[in-house]
Length: 327
Image (cartoon, rainbow, N blue to C red; front, side, top):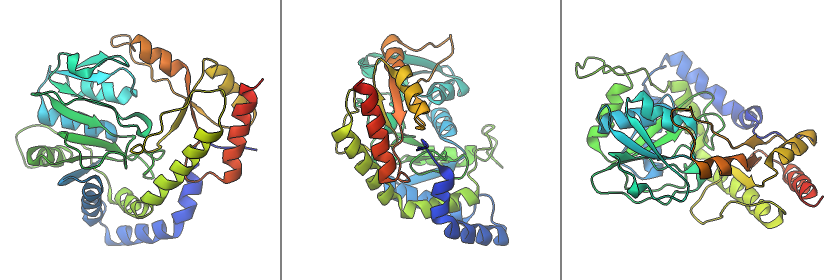
């Protein structure tokens, strides 16, 4: 049996008729950039998250970078966890600021910095304290559905195709209750056109992607529920590997298991037709991974956990992991 980690073609086939109808409408009208579909998605996203505003962008990376530029200045220090994807640290550098990494188990509030980027890996909300006087910009790119009615300054989202709410290409957004941040990023994504305060960037979400996301949002609660059901089966039946914490608030962007035999398990599952993903996010030598994060990532594996899996595929994944564990 072949089990793909993620199958975008299968996901598309389920909404193909709706997507083609919307594409025809958008293309026929010629409403391609910053039109009604984008504004509709921004309103729907803000309502879903529980904020006043949302701004649709080109990626989650741009969301972080523009949020930093809206709230801080060049050379400011930004605390972030070592256990995160490269884009979190890269966005800080792109904003011409200084990343200050802290390791797993360390408290971010003990790091001297002007801002903090808590990261919600794989849908699990990080336990962070908002320090007085520091901007808090949440990297929620893997946590849509877990983070509701946030009190931080800005929340950053990704709609990369493999995300729980995925576009058909790159897309992202910010949400916020801060009027200044909302207006700044809304203008910055379009080069500050007609505004002499700064040079912005091209980070516009196009209307075709917004149209797709508006369709997918209708089914998003079902998506979360199906992923949660698969995660529950994994929790109950997987043997011989470390399992992620199951909490009421978390969502399942990924299901990450841990074993010191990670590489052997990866190769075994590959031979059995099961596609998995290693959980390593290497940084550059200038900002190297810290020891505990590096060790954790070297021992973890992302296994298939998405709404397009069949029951047969889920139990096949379980049987093969258990087979490996019990040898």
